[in-house]
Length: 336
Image (tube, rainbow, N blue to C red):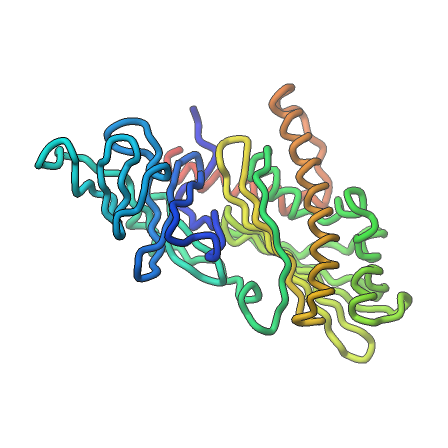
């Protein structure tokens, strides 16, 4: 079967706060992985399947910094090599599970699932607003019954927002949007456009304390730095020069060919530390992402029942089509 999920990529399947001294099972790019921390606080990622029999290590237990299988008692060190077998004094040759490189940055755990030696050649995407004191963030996570490519293509096309959630859409999306400036490299794509002055959406104006008819000049920038991330920057400037900035971060980890793990975050540089605003925005955007997920799961179901068919593309699809090309090239390079 042809694989559609790149593995030469740093994925973020969990937030740092989720990984502790308990064994956390995740699935990424079709691979079972167990995450945990050593006593020193380092993150370990191992293949979540005992080398002896098909049993998840995440159903076992930690013995110091090693993992003991809950079925047969094999014990694995942080490098994945078996160090102890309860039924005999010697460890069988080749008794090991895969050990994956990990890093932590911006409050996220990143795991490299490809050839370990290539991990140093790839940068982890820089997402400082997720951990910077100058920003406040609300976030959520869901398993989605849709492919990671469907999610990326949706997030790359903001012209769909007025139809999925018209009550939160910026007024600038109510008309034909300005043309996109698109920059493409072999492994990434970005976009930028400047919108003419228009009022903020009502929910944002309420938080900022701005009259509903106050015009703001808005800049949108979008980034696909890797198959793991889509980020949108929405920066709005009032006539007095005041800026209000939003960051929409989408961490997409493919679980398998037709499902994904989505960690979303909405960050702002205004109304910092305001719990009431946090709760307000959490309600708004949890509802929004629930609608997005419903739409993507319907689209995935159509594809699985009827298969891919002819598509009519428009200007707003330019970035999504580039994402397809980049992912296809990455898979070819991996020999998938």
